[in-house]
Length: 155
Image (cartoon, rainbow, N blue to C red):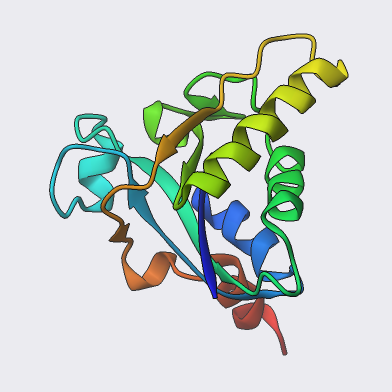
């Protein structure tokens, strides 16, 4: 299994999308990229920790490639928005790829460049590409949030 970590706005939606991808074995949501140890949701919300809301995936490289995961990442948010996605504003909602290997970094940078040159976006892509750092798991109620909500509405 390989690990991938992406920030693309509110982690609930991002996780829900990646949970549907064949080859993704598990997902979790949490925080990465900050300077404050073991942050809570309220700490991150206060905008003083520097963390981004992220989804971390374990995936089978024999079933889904990192490039395919990046294609999904680019398609589910607007990478030209600095520190926001839709109504969600703040650095915790920034567009960011945290790479776990030199190979992931190379693939991510090439993917971003290809997308920028494609003309799909009129504005510059502001997505950060950074080395993975300490990952802090969000509280249990945030894990698989949409899945839990859907289950609670079933009769």
